[in-house]
Length: 322
Image 1: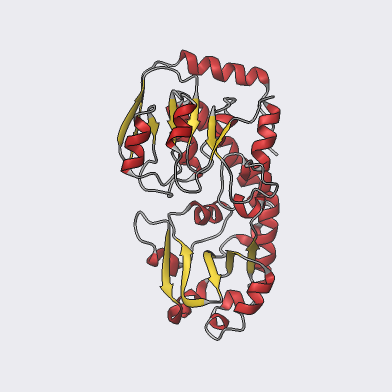
Image 2: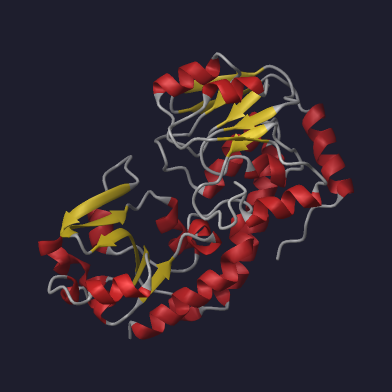
């Protein structure tokens, strides 16, 4: 695992941030945001943006409650719990985003900056949040920010762009070492199916090439199938294709999806799904509503937490594709 940052290193980071010239300006999909001075109170909305300041030794005053993968119901994922304990910090305010952003709850934390580099905020959301504090939004399109961009974009909003680059480089080194231990994945194609619902098999939903679940498979040495690349629309994180065209996925070696073995067994009895070579061979990685399933959508703190186990599952599926 990546070694936790020492108190001395965290102190150096804080000194570097305070020494950096402010204001800083960050460009994003809604224009640009200027942060006038080093933020003392950081809030985040959307998915996992709080992991960037935490990794940099900054405890946010509030962030979104975890709903997916939270197997003990405390609103925190295990790698976030570990980081808070490492920083000897109490649990901040947790925003309930089940019905969208809780603007009042965000405002109540009195943030100096709001990080939302990986999120689906709309122009209206952005405008409302901007009345509370400067907002760092996603670079291009909703839910298409990569983990690298999440780190760099949010770190820039904190005035810690160099530290963000360092964090990215450290994670890339860890991924490379783990990937090198699994050469059997090289050249294999991986498709991340959004769901396979026995009640509706008229279409196959999949995460598009721009989605970071798919890009994470690429990080791990796999290729994106041609059919997925061709069916992926610019700026979209997911897509659908008629199940009658399932033969387009003949070049898929491994399928990753959410569900359990019972559902997969039921699906393979369907004549259309039976024509999906990877599924019929059992070259499937099944993810549950647990930390592993959550971390397949990689975030700064989760990558190292699940990397070896995820690679082991992909490797086992890849051997069944031969």
